[in-house]
Length: 452
Image (cartoon, rainbow, N blue to C red; front, top):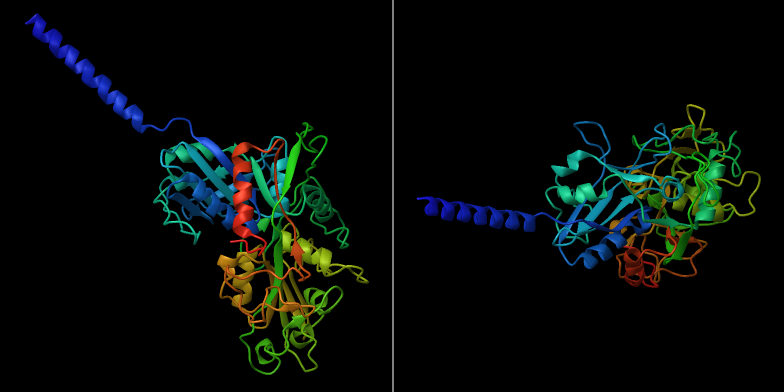
């Protein structure tokens, strides 16, 4: 009897050991963060496709916006230097390998916000809403497989509250640092001061067409952090392929003075100090924007925000040596009711409003006849949308003007005047897991400058 009991106990013990071993095999080991990045919309989709290829699996998740149950952001940049600094929400993609041991992710923000987030000491972090553990992905990336029904707990825990190891931006960190200081400087007197300060931070940049905002906050790229006093570590910036910044309009109005009534033969704007710079300042109507000698309609202008890469390109290319005010922000006072969110009217000529980023720009122009804005060309997102214009009689793309943004098979015209640098900034030396992706990203974009 005792011997039988000993055999039974031994069998139960072995079974328990085997069950525990089986369960242990199903529990992911430490998840290695290959990429945890934040940056601009231009590079967002291309890095997703390259990271997906590197993962060797079909595991991905994308999401943006606000949790309807809590009102909190699904994904955001958290600057932990002060609890008073507002969160910066953005769209998020995440990919992971088949064993849940490696993860890549990217939060979409503005270039200057990303630069601030990386150089802040302590470095800012990715903050995730717990709802991602039960909320289906939104399939925001056309080049990826269908999203997972939720973000796995192991992946969620690996990247939540973790600092960035890379930022993807338009322009070098030094340029973004200089522009950030201008944005914070008061009183507003563009192009040297834009009135959103004083530093370290004072007010958000608000959109007139959504509830989104961006916050300029003081930072430095060398020396010590201006808020915490901690030393800023060495960094490395790597040049990526350039990108195009393209003005586009709503040409649906074919009536008298409507852009659609003449766009087929008059689709050119000029810069610097030409019709484009005047249009963004609200000084010209629909026909004058294109140099057409005919009565025009009121032109609705949607300006990007001063922390974004396309805004920087316009500000520093379209207004070179212009007088008297060398800025698309002429007349904008953030402290006034009509200045933030932007809502300025030049009676009978124009209305100026604010959008934040490419998605809002395309939606605002798409829904507003006789309007104009500008975007960085990302070929999958913009393919088939109209109507882009030429600048100084130079088409942004090789071939004849069609007015419709082309597919990724198109190539950029290197003679086009509004071409912007794109960069990746990391710690120095560049982390091996990030370095492994840089070459494939540039290869995917190629010299055609077709960011995905």
